[in-house]
Length: 334
Ligand code: SF4
Image (cartoon, rainbow, N blue to C red; front, side, top):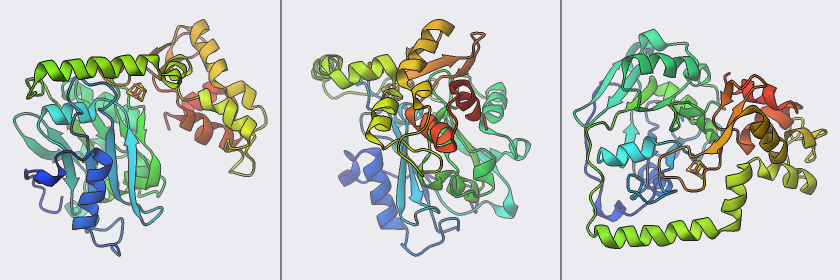
């Protein structure tokens, strides 16, 4: 970022089969000294997918965002859905490593396509929250692009700032939320990454037939799996009731494990609202066969979010003493 330039490097052979989380660990261990300032020029932000991300194999397209965390001071990896890793793989890119700090406190967008990887000024987007930012970026860039971005918290270096990623609908509702990696992205002066895979061919296979047969059996296994079946019905908020009864659900700033009124925010109540208001379950990325993501509407049938997750209920809800599902969904826009 310091020189505002982009370069391509070959992925070392011995790292070819490592997944996104492993790549984050390998790159950080090799290239970043442990004692550096997490918000300084020597830290690196790594965004990496797995070796099968862009293939037709389902559930392998999640993305890892990593770096030295300003929150824990250790190597942190935060994981998210959405099609970003699938698109990167189609572009032949396993990882983006962001180094240095942009000059003069300015912000930039990185645009990646089959033709180029360029940094462009993000002056006009400074101070925007993720939803507004993505709305504006889609006016300029291909609507099918995946966007990885930060909001105001990331710009200001808040240690809890997340990195947002668009889902299959272009809704920036998927979050790499752990470890304050949004602050690391902000410290670099990187406001957003736009990944446009238009014009790329399908990922090449050494043995297409064998791969297809393997994928078929993998899909059959997923479809028979009981936990996957429950996630398809209730999404990750399925865990709200069981965690509350066990006493492990965050409540009132972690002062209790059984939030008062948790019965109002369980997966079952969300499901009931989805039925009544016209939402549905869907996949956050192409090819997902589990479809645990919840499109949740308000009482008038307008979409509030396309990813109502356990983490949202816990961190924006019960841990703040809030047990109003619509209010929690609206807090995601902050
Ligand atoms: S919708 Fe759920 S199961 Fe499907 S890819 Fe996204 S996070 Fe995974």
